[in-house]
Length: 167
Length: 167
DNA sequence: CTCGTCATGTTATAGTATTACATATCCCGC
DNA sequence: GCGGGATATGTAATACTATAACATGACGAG
Image (cartoon, rainbow over the protein chains, first blue to last red):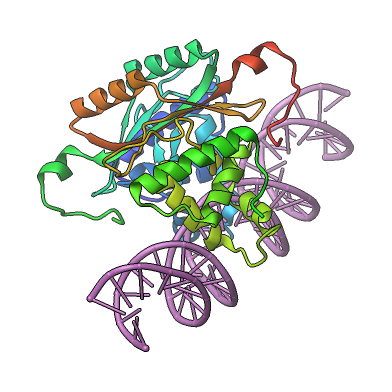
């Protein structure tokens, strides 16, 4: 009795299955379910919101249930954490299959719309490389970078408000 | 009976006094004291750590005491929040005096060392402008950006561990 | 003087995340 | 089949981060 997700989400989940299998990682039903909830959401989702939804089908769920799963999904590069929102989104790249099988912090950048709350993910090489270069000039070697911009998306800049952040 | 800070900190505090006076902002003794604690620390400092220290001299201090003050200092551009650490650091620019007197989200980038926990602030124009350009291409206009890189600083890359993150 | 504004005090609570230990499951080698 | 490790999940308690709501104090403008 797996939860019903959108067609798009199901497709991404199938891809995640393949990726994990390829890596020897274990995308259990719990992990798959939580990943599905994250992928299905229009906006980044908080850990406790995921927990509430999970409880609808899994009675004993508790914070560690969620946080452990999120850790797994983060390690696998299937989701990202948006620091400014303390919330989680699916990795838009769906995560490319990587034969080396190791940790995949795709450098990502997020554009967070103040008005509608939607978050767009970019994976722009220029941004990543400029930051890496500048850091290197300072003698610093980067492992992972968080890049999050807040502002207005194209829709909200031109249109009257139609949708609030809480949606 | 103001707290004793390092010479460098005192100098920055004097500068902050001047900046606030110039803007008509009120850098009260409480605000000045907390700013001093932040400036004096070697690494970013959490709100509750500041609270603990503050309590040594101010009996009734409570979370709002700290958070309100942090809000003020953030608005004045005298400190930054490091999202990945939920902690606060002084703004390295000391904050340039700005005759327009209004909010000054200096675009800053942080390099967080995994080993020693120190955080270096950069204000690199290339990083800022590339991000702005790329966002604009996506139809997005940026108000503020968080850019935080984690990795190893030059000292920790070359030297054996001498100092832990908790210092 | 008294009203408004700003700064701070005080109590309570909300929201986010982790620790520690218990249980279950599965696979592997014997 | 059985013991034993590795992995996954359950369960209870707690720590850490942040805000809400209302009270008090200090001080200048009119």
